[in-house]
Image (cartoon, rainbow, N blue to C red; front, side, top):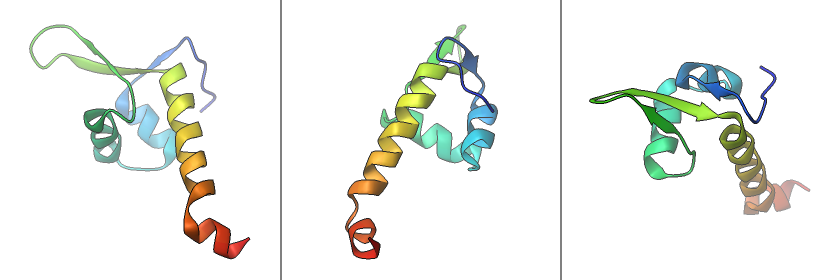
Length: 74
């Protein structure tokens, strides 16, 4: 999926982009690591902006680059 910063994406689309389960994306949203918008009332619908997807991807990349395991394999 090509991510555009101004687009809004469903949780399932974001999960497919990262090749993880939707549950993993929901956990990232609940923890505040991935920003999302709640649309509607009640349970509503969650949408993730492209900007949030790109920021989350960058944060994950930085975390991987900074992990001790990454330094050992370098």
